[in-house]
Image (cartoon, rainbow, N blue to C red):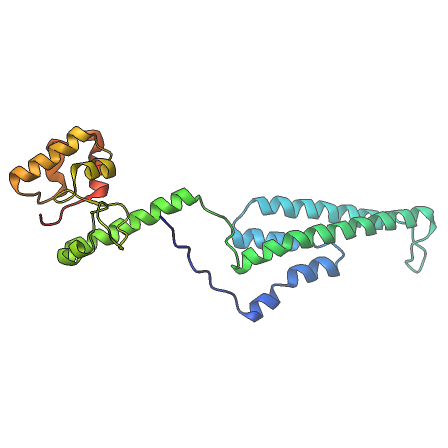
Length: 231
């Protein structure tokens, strides 16, 4: 059973160009403000882990600033001496590393903020279960409003060829015992008892009519999966 994925609208060209400020800030400041885009993304996406990343880049910026501040300078503000050159070189290399690492991470982050890709991938099994539940709800509405169309679509009859996906329903008034047992998670004896009663009374008026033969523990499952169409 396939699960349709939501269509994610693409952002405008203006939004995409404007969002490149992530890279501009990171590169133009030689990594000193590389942490800023991560804070922005953390706020937009609601992901606390991004604050931790921002803290790492912030710490790197603090180290670079400290190294540059400690570098001996002359009256004109130019770095002088072996120590000054060494500290400046280390700060420059660190800045280059920060720029590269930050920009690589910001490529994916920018897409998530723009909505080009989902920020978090949900559990596919959960998504499938929720989608099936939504289809069952839709199918039940159709059963209630137009039972003739519901019958034509073979809602509740997974044993018959059909094109309509009802999300996993079974018609207690028309489906075979084996199908009722499979869909509702019942044992064969209980399913046969349901079929026996429906033959005896000429069909059920509501799903809860089978409550006398269905074990209490299975009632919720039956209510979730069963419908009754005219026999």
